[in-house]
Image (cartoon, rainbow, N blue to C red; front, side, top):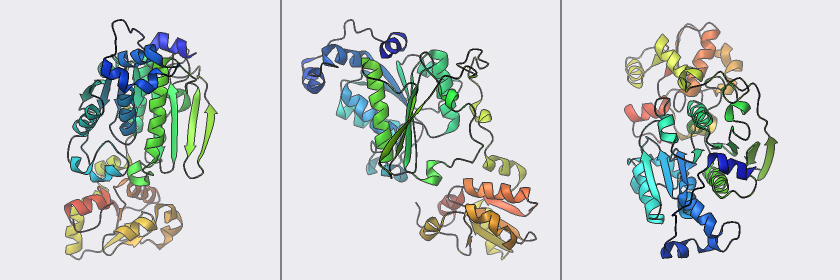
Length: 395
């Protein structure tokens, strides 16, 4: 099966690709392996891989593919390095805080292996630019952390007939697979529709064990190398699930869905769509548009004026211990349904969490129960610290 994948999807043209004397020494441990050898190393040098995201998954991905001698590596990212990234995004260092992630990554990768060509795309991947960016790469690796981009990458890879090496991480669990519609299922065969907005918290709100992206990202790098070399059994048709707490891997068999809207027998998606709309408007956006949101500045003014405002923190107790807005009461989001009777509908209630997502769901929940004087603190306590009280501890 792997040879079929390579012949259809991965560039195997190694004509004129030779290794320098320095590269013979650098890749010596590959050259003595019969499964790789000289021809395999030439395949790696002639191959191109596009990494979407220079963060937690992108860090080990980029390092190991660069070290392995993949000839051309593209990286798509538009963010800057934040100190909170350093717990898991090992390609960046403390001195890179505030710097473009792409500039930081490019510097480290060229220092590791100057023989590799590093191409950077400092932009958000969108329906307008995805096909143009992806089309010239042999293997695409999804290192993103949001559903709109995952569906975008999947659909672009299906339309361009590219293998999509998938990985995701959350708290203590990671997943990896290879979605390649020419030979097996795509991401939509597994998840035809995204979860309801806000149901699955992001890593920024739910957290992630720092070492986890290293494990999953390395698996993704390994799958990409196997695709290029044409060796072993890839994760096409298999979803690998890793539980870090139990140190266990389990595997789910995946099948191509004949009714898949993009790779099925009668596809209805024939071009890239609006993926933000497809994945739904976030609760924060809805509250902003309907006036059920309050800015840190507005909340500060109300508190200073002595207005009757109840502050509810819907984070978990261990987060509440780190920091809190003075005068707030802790009611974790999971406990809110059983605490509703304790809330006074006649008073103004402002909910907050770390970044605004969980508190937005709290406000939506109470609005459905008939509460009319509830608001969400835009940006959560992170925004409060940034704009109102920088002396508070931030995490």
